[in-house]
Length: 528
Image (tube, rainbow, N blue to C red):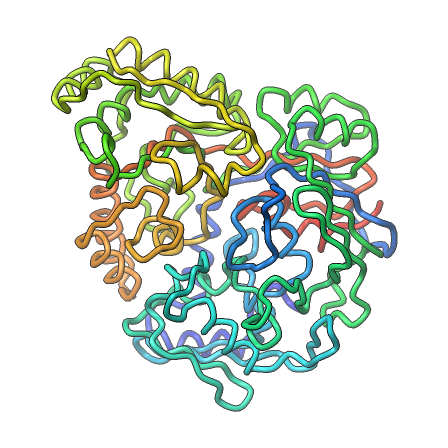
C-alpha cells in the first residue's frame, strides 16, 4: 500500500484533466495545510509497528441517540466508530493528497464529467461476503438517491449516474468536478454490503476492526479483523471506545490510565495536561472552526440587520485569547481560511465594532425581546463561556442576547438544526467545495443555517467544474463574499484540534483533516 498514486495512475489523471496535474493541485493543498505540533515538544516513538494490545479511547461528543448509519454520523463518537469499522473509496492524507483505498485507481475524461474508479479486488466484508463494484454503486445510490437524508447528499448532488463497468465504478456528473475524489473521501461514504440499503445501522464494513458490541452514548467494542486487506493498519487486538462527554472526566481518564487516548482537550487546560508525566498533548491547526448558527428563514434571524448586529458585536480576538487560550486564530463568518486552496485573502476582516452593532440592531427594528442562544459543552469545548462573553459584549451594544445552557446528551438531535440559534463546530473539509456543499448549498441536509441563495448555489456549481485555477479562485471569492454578507453563521474562531495520548502509544502523526489523526489514530498507531 503506497501513500501516493502510482506512476501509471498519475499519468492517467493528468491526461484526464489536461490541466495542471491532479497531484500538483493536491500538493498545493498540502502547502496550505496547517502544521501539527506537540505541546510537550516530544514525539511518539517511531519504528516498526508492534502488534497486540487493547486500545482504549475516551471520546467526547456522543449521545444515547446515536446510530451506526454512516450517513447519519453527526458527532465525534459516530465519526470515530465508523472510521474504525469502515472503509471509503479514498482517504485524504495529512499533506492533502488523495490516497486510494477501496478505489485502487482513478481517471477522468477531458472535462472531469466522467470519473472511473477501479475497485480493489480481494476485499471482504465482516460478514464474509466479498466487496464488489455492485456494493460500491449501491452505497452511493443510497446516499445520493431521491429522498436521501444522508449528510453526504449535498456533495453528491452533481452526480447524474453511477454504474458498474466490469470491475470499475463509473460516476457521470451533470457538470465537471475536478475535486470529486476528495468528496468521495467523505467519512460518511463508507462502503457497505449491498449499499446498506436493507440495514444501514448494521455496522458491517470492510475495515480493520469488527464491531462486536455497542451501547450508544456509553461504549463501543471492536475486535481485530483477521482478513483485513491492508497490513499497514490495524495493529491492536481490539479497541474499546468509551464515551466521556465531560471534559474534566475525560482528562482524568487519560491521566489515571483508564484510557490511552482522548479527543477534544479543552484549550484552557491543554498546557496543564501536557505537564503530566507520560502524557503527550497534540495540537494541529487547519480548517476546524467553532461557530454560532442562526436559521436565516426563522424570525428574528430572517432580518439581515439583526444578523449583522450580532456579527459585529462578537469580539473574535477575545474568543481566541480566552476560549482557545491561543490555540487557534480569528474567524471571519465564513467556514474557509488560509488552510484552503483558492482562499480569498482580500475578503475584509469583520471587526469587533459596537457602534456598528448598535446601528444595525436599531435598523433591524427588533422589539427588544430576549434573543435566546442555546449552548452546551457538547457543541465545542468552552461553548458556554464563549456564549457568556458574547452576551456581555452584546449588552454594551444594547442587544438583548440571553444564553440558555442545555444538557450535552441529545444536543445534536434536539438542538442543532432544530432550534433557531445555537452553537456548533465543524472540523472543516479538505477542499472548499466539500465544506460549502456539506453545510451551505441549498440542497445540503446539514445546511444548519437554512441558507438558500440561488446565486451562491450557481457560483459554487460553476466553481467545482472550473479547471483553471485563477478563474476558480475568482468564483470562490464571489461565493465567500455572498456568505460573509448574507449568511447566518457567526464564525469567531478557527480552533486547533487538540488531542492527547499516553506514552504507551506510538506512531502518532499530525493530520489537519479531523481530530485524532483524521480519525485514523486507532488504525495507524500501536502500543509502544
